[in-house]
Structure formats: C-alpha cells, structure tokens
Length: 248
Image (cartoon, rainbow, N blue to C red):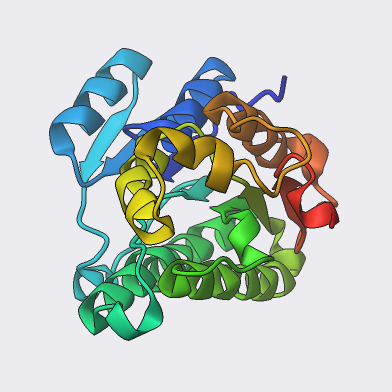
C-alpha cells in the first residue's frame, strides 16, 4: 500500500461510488481527505467517518471556480453524470452541463491546485476518465466528448507539470457498480427496447472480455498507487480497468 502520511487529497464526487472508495483508500493510507460533493450531507457524513473535511460544491457553477485556490497534494477529478439520448434528441443544455462538470470543472480545479503543487514540488492529478475516453458508444455524445477531452487535458497537465514534480494520469474503467451506472438502466432499456433487468448483461457487459462490472474498490486501488511516491515516473498515461473492452 502507498504511504500517503502527511498528504492532503481532494476528491470530487467523493461522497459515493468511485470517489468514496478513493477517499476510504487514501484515508487508510494516511492522507487527509477532503470530500467534495454536491450532496453536502453525504459529504459531511463521509468526511466525519474518515476524519477529513467536506466541501459542498456545485461543479456545474464553473463561474464560481474561476478565482479558486486549492492547497492539496492530490486531486482526484471524479465527479460526473450521464445522459443517454440520440443526438437529434440530445438537449443542448444537457450536453453543455456534462461538459461543464466533466471537462471544464476539472480544468478549473487543476488550474487552482497547480500553483501550490509547483511551490511544494509535488502533486498528483488523477482523472477518473472511462473506457469511453478511448471508445465511443451510441447515445452518449456528451459523455464520450467530455471523457475524450479529459484525456487530452490530462496529457497537457502532465507535460506542464513534469518539471515541478507533478504527475497527471487517467483511469479508464468500464461500467462500475455505482449509482451513476444504476441510473442509466431505465434509459438504456428504453433506447434499446429491452427489459431493464436485461440491460447489464445485454448492453453493459457486451464489450468486456470479463463479464463483470468493475467494483469501486478496484478503481481506488489503482488511484492509490498513482497517488503515491512509487508512481513518480508515471505521467501522461491512461490506465484501463475495462475487462478487456479496449483490447479489441
């Protein structure tokens, strides 16, 4: 296990799913965690349990993030949402919302965190991307566009941060057993014309060679390694946890 004693970490969407699993792993490794989440009550409950801090924040309000300064050693850009529609039916405001939360907000948080990381000569940016940062699926134009953009942002951050001891990497899971995935099931059933209880097997597990959902703790394990000192030479990279989806 990585030793994160004395490190400070900030995890967006940290009150549930992948974010909470990362917060638990980081806290167990000795880091002080800040749980950033739209759900303030859930963020505070998780922070109290882990001996950390809570930040109730609406990342869609990007105007409020422009002058932000973050003093953190580890930033995990995890917060996200999904909206499933064919392009002709995809509401422009929904497309813009997904890009604000999953691309513009990560840029603004990275921008806010880098000066302090540069001053200390250490930083870890971990971007929770998706196999959809590499591959496309129908009906997910905004999500796929945002994740592809996040991959590029992560690489630029890696190049700029290299001289300052800052690394930036992406993690690309396939479908993870989280509330975000569960919320997609009804839309996927409607669009594909199948019963909801068949969505996981017939839609979500079609592409991976390993026919299983990813567990949040599996993503957190990789994030923990990327956050530690042992990953010093790992930057500008993208790590799939997709059961072989992207091997095709």
